[in-house]
Length: 135
Image (cartoon, rainbow, N blue to C red; front, top):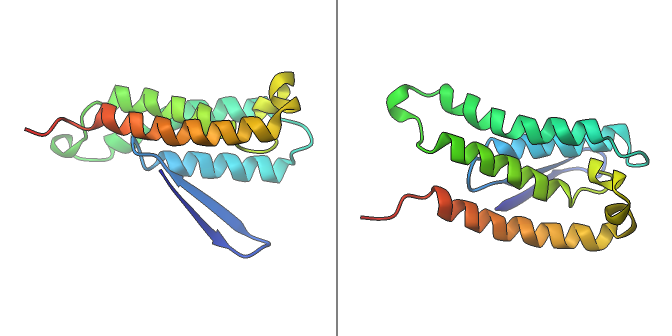
């Protein structure tokens, strides 16, 4: 996982890349932007669900844009891993839809740190699951 941060204090973009699918970083970027635009005072569960559903769709649709002989293997596995990665990483976003759960809202800083660590470890696991063994 790589985190890149670009922009001024007024316009800030965070890009997180997933080993299992680089287009998934755009989904998380859209999610962070959406949460920021809608405000963190009231968690938007619908936006969380949309991001979780959009992540595997981006993987599948992204693979379909390539010629058949150039499409990466294990697309269903990568799609599921993208959804799981989005579930984990969105827990680290302040004001995310997860904040609608009392246990998450009342422990937000701790949950965010644990989610970031879990996301990092999951990224390594996902990479191992989609990388073919060397011959």
